[in-house]
Length: 205
Length: 205
Image (cartoon, rainbow over all chains, first blue to last red; front, side):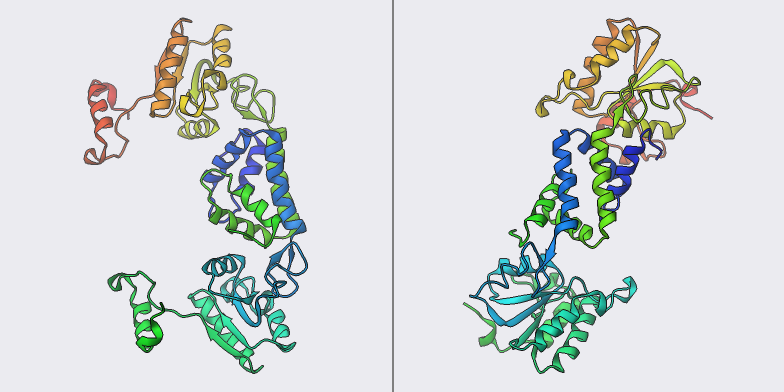
């Protein structure tokens, strides 16, 4: 696609670097931006620039935070001896929305993925181990995605954490609440049979 | 979704204003931007800001252009008596890619859509009529989308252009080249029967 404007071509190129956005969608976005008022587009560009330039991370849990210590880590009402390991801020939001968890978090910033050149050193693993070494942590809950990379990362973390004498648990895998058995994939169903629990323990009212 | 960072929330809000982007995708984009180097994100923000602040339009055809007159309108090899009316630059690119058109364009910047508050005054209609009034235009080809809004706009332009004694044509509608009859929708197929042409005229070798 050769365009009559370098400015447009440049903007389309940049928008197309966003995840999941091809050149056709990027063009639609650029034309949408062109139809807006100048101050509105300036606010857009500014929000993106400032995000990268000024955003900080919580010194305790490594989550994105505007303050040195995030709101969750600063909350005295939460159980600091319980640490839930997640991939990124989206998982923190998802777990917070369940209102079932009252411990703290540790944000890894990704999962181990040799194919993408991401090893433990690219993640906030050292920070997690240092946090456990400082003492006060009783249990670490692994809450990573049920993917090959997530499982690899959980396996690696379990080994490193066990050495330090801390309890390591993992969030339950099984059929979804409200799910029909015939629609569950074989691996999940098979695993949910192997991981069966006494009925009295399974029913929560 | 309440986040631990105003900067992140602000960036997600802005990214979610892009067409077709919800808050979930906007969050994925923001986290992707956060993983990049600072200069890379600055280039991204700059490209968007500059697009809106500095982009210009061709004084003849109203297409997006970095020069006062675009490359197509400045080309002496093209037929200036033939003007193809399109909605936006994407349609210019699409028609140019066919290599079947050697006239000039006129970019309306949209189509008439009372529901969205877009009337002829919001489009480059005045510029088109002034261009015809200046003389030298023999035929105007309407190449708008085959939608209710596109048809309304074509009807409106035909009336205004006919008054000025210029030929008004419309691009052909019918079954796609390579298309199977059973897969064509009824309206298109019905129309293609009504608009049938002598076989000798229809076959191009």
